[in-house]
Length: 234
Image 1 (cartoon, rainbow, N blue to C red):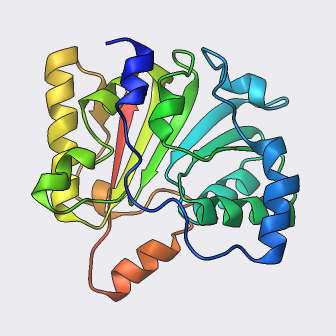
Image 2: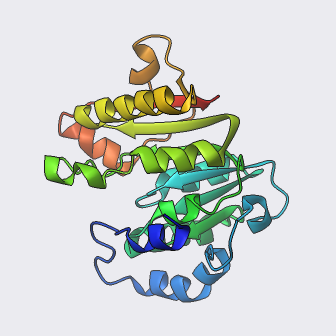
């Protein structure tokens, strides 16, 4: 199946719009967002060309309200960070953070991350974050989960050797699903994603420098236990 047909058959599930944007957010979406948005009009995208002088490029898939991405961008000013989020209100929140913190190393795609991943130059990413993705808990909706053979293929191509894939979730079934799909991908494609955990603390302990997210705090308040998976690209 060629790229055009592959793109046309995909759907963005879930909401893309919520409450009316606040005046400041609406203004920044008109003025600042066009300057930090990622265009998919061209073919292959070399991420470094989207930024100025950066050491490497990271990607966050489905950044929600953007608090994690903004923290990483502020903490790592020499790293270019791309974020993908279909939900306009989440994009507006991140754009507000970019303005408030004076961040120059963030670029945004207001769409499904798969449309970007399939266009990235090979081995162009040093790190990918997939943090608390929608679990689509009903079995008939499991096929909508972001972790699947297609996206693992995109990630394997886009991550450089030694690059890292970070996946966090508070849903036990999605953790098991992710490990099973990564294991199957490794069996079929060769050892590609190496799980870095040496013991149980390796997936129970947050990543170094982890700022947490509002969703994570809510999950913990409601009695759910987050798990943190990290895979190294072979």
